[in-house]
Length: 427
Image (cartoon, rainbow, N blue to C red):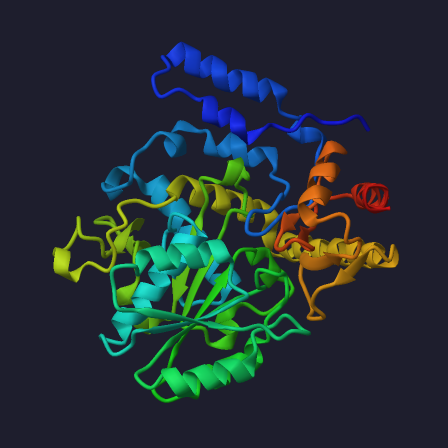
């Protein structure tokens, strides 16, 4: 394959602060015309945004003016279609995540996690200022959490990963709960974690909830498709679920807009951020839908608000509802299983080349971490050279370690192409 010209980020440094609209449009059009054709690329990069197939029906249905043009449905009498779709979205995500209550979406997975942390602090009524976050949680999510709590006295402590399995180290968790969680704590884990490893929530949950005072367990997820083959957070008695739902019918979109998922146990519903759509009856005793809980400051006394979030990702949530309804329960499980199988095929083939070493031994879903054994080629160079061959090879997690993702959009021929080109770059 011929070389693909890569865009030099220094181009953006030439962007003047006083360009008129026509010049600005031409500037970015010139950059766009030199970008490689994304439709020719094999995408193996994940890390929170995944390249799933989206049926044409999703775009067709969501482009209807009834969904696409309305503002937030404050007036339920004229917004029954949108409210019904959001109600179905909540129902589907509740079933997938195993949680009692799910809201009508958040901005994205990172903001959902930050709101989940703040919610756990409120539930402790000021007695808890310790957040224990597994090092397996997406670092970008952790960065947003730190931003949210920056002006508070809340403290964050990391829980290390097991060097061999890549799972959250249970002994380190016990130690930090015992030594620093005397006034209560919140424990955050990601399932599967950032390195692709499936966490052992069956082992972690009794340790967390068995501690006195009882900590809150928050489970984050960037790939909820995994819950088609592994048990969801609700199955393991998670108190709060905060996830990224971009995989459900939404495009990668250069990183946004995304779709935040948020669920909790029913006893905590009054402290949930965002809005919840409920099903009721109208004056004629027909099914009707409306917001039954909306705890932001615009709707209630400012001091009683649980969040100052002023909107959500309703359009993306409706896309997710359409997509999941097209999938069906059987299709959801089949796609999940296909992701699992294809990722394991690629992993085995890469290890057979003797050019890579598996970073962690823990089971994984559709994402895994490898170490490049050729010391003369670091991950940044490997990714750049693979891009010239029309392959987005993964995400750099260190100078020698790469995170690789596989979805149903990657065919067996794509996998063989990855192997062939990786050999060419590394030998």
